[in-house]
Image (cartoon, rainbow, N blue to C red; front, side, top):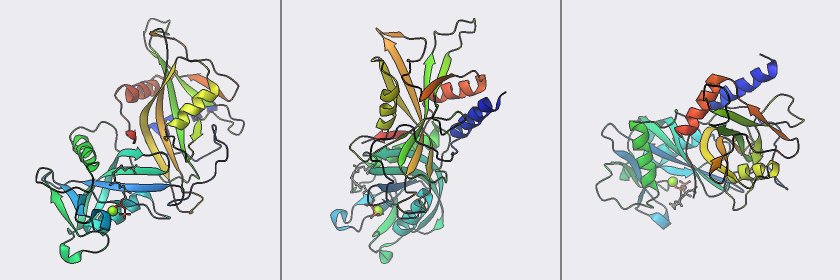
Length: 334
Ligand SMILES: CC(C)=CCC/C(C)=C/CC/C(C)=C/CC/C(C)=C/COP(=O)(O)OP(=O)(O)O
Ligand SMILES: [Mg+2]
């Protein structure tokens, strides 16, 4: 195998395992993009979903004036220089008195790149439930909730998060995933952008064909996955992939489906310089005319990208399986 093919295969294996890659040149960059700064241009929130052996969920009673006495999942805003998991452990300790260990990211929610919430399934590893005698400005107390007894909630948005935790524990729909430590200056997506054709194969196997969009950026001598930068406008994070696709394909029958997240790269150790996040994202492109699937991927304009026909059967099967089974961390744009 030539070294370019080998590098591509290693890249794909890395991304499919939920691991990370160093950041490189961006492919689709909006004008005037500058590094994001935590709590100035972006706010990241962590929320913990933690169950005890009786399937009760950890809840904290809020001390803030606007939601005083109401109950919520342990949650809070990330601070400068913190990792996502350090923020999770700090918030759970401060608000609930409990030491916790992350199991997996459960969901990413966003209101545009300015507000991103990481919902994390975790387990108790010690400490003791905060009592009213320990009430402070972080919370009044913590309790395990059976999800049936009446409890005045700060907001009902936590209910689907708790449900997602229950479902994941019963039947995980994607492999366990934790953020990985790679610095990034902006919020962006590295795209595993796939085009599948089930009727384009002319051999007798009837195997679907799979193409991936690769960057042919001059700054990257080896094959690499395209990276699209999000800006702090009202657009959602997945919108950056739509912009990249619009820049290189003109077909009017293209449909872009964001399947979800394969990996989350973050390292906020240098405030204002590495407060960004790279989401490694699985995106499916569909090109349908008059209800009929088109057997080859849309034509590309310019020479910034090229389609790669995946011939490695094992990688191809893994990617198609992740798409078909929606085996990805869900991203919700609220
Ligand atoms: C912000 C995103 C992506 C989702 C929020 C989903 C919505 C609309 C929730 C309903 C309203 C609500 C309760 C918003 C609070 C979200 C928020 C800013 C949580 C941060 O946690 P806090 O507990 O307020 O922060 P600290 O613990 O750091 O004080
Ligand atoms: Mg809080």
